Image (cartoon, rainbow, N blue to C red; front, top):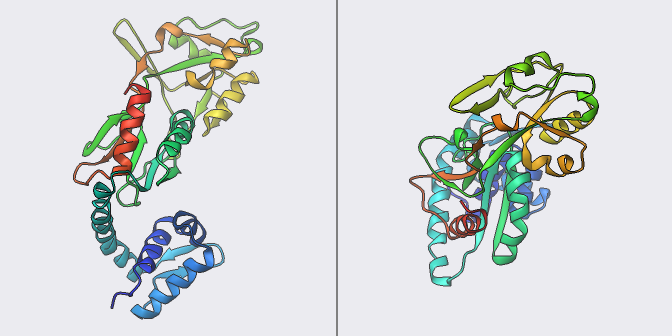
Length: 298
């Protein structure tokens, strides 16, 4: 039998997504003890354990997994029904959950968030940062923000930021006494700062000039999974780095880094906001898209 209070189901869904009572509480604006009480109450009503709990982890039982799968579309339908009421209110409201990479969060979403929240006081913005691929539907997000190459084909994608360009950089100390690379293949004789994705795959540096495209798995004795750390490694003279130019403009202007192979670094489309084709676009998501496109020139 379903509980009288649907908030218990919302609490269950949040814990199932996050595998954490604390993070579920942060999403819902509840204390950890309140979330725990809701789950206990739901389990007592249903007569089954929904989670296996230890001092370090929370995991769904088989029954919990089944309920989570059945509950997801129901909560989405309920959310859509409530969302329709915003059309009568005349203003956007609700919680907008967006999954994105750390780079997109730093470069695009964080500078934009303050203005967006100020413009829409009835909207709550929940941004989940994750450099690995996330199924936004299964994870309960309304939308995702990634580069175009990472957007699933069955999603609606809207460019919401300006075009991007990479920058190959090194410190003056690293370049001292070394031959400056004039062609991408000459990087193979240098120490490079490699970027490792959450999947374990290394980023291959991409170049293009006069219709010639080159992709290199550059050498290097250090690998990092954070762009800020990669920039720091380049500044410290460990090796040559390849990062979005947004991260290094000030360092280039100050002379702490030197730009290399600039004529080989192409401009690519900016970050895309994407969402399921078949899902209703909420007033909060529509407001976010419209404002981001207006400011970013997407």
